[in-house]
Image (cartoon, rainbow, N blue to C red; front, side, top):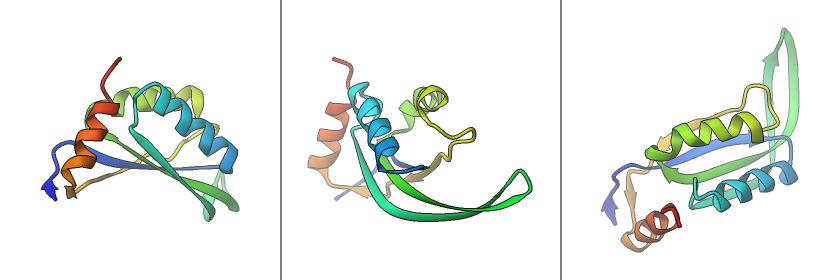
Length: 110
């Protein structure tokens, strides 16, 4: 394991598996993320426009670098179905060398 550089995990929620898989596939194809893991079965409770809400959602964990955040945020504006998409980033503290190398290779423009 190595100490990380600019590798991060970006978390977002979407209104179901289909929306999450579509977002992940597009961002992988565009080389903005190296990988996206979609977790079904999330339930979010929140207040929206004065109303209490409860929705089933899929959680997407997107593996990328800080360098790609501005472009990902721009793509969320057109790809993400929510009016206010969740974008939370977590720094990767440590990363295996083979995974880091693979990740950076996948994020390189072709």
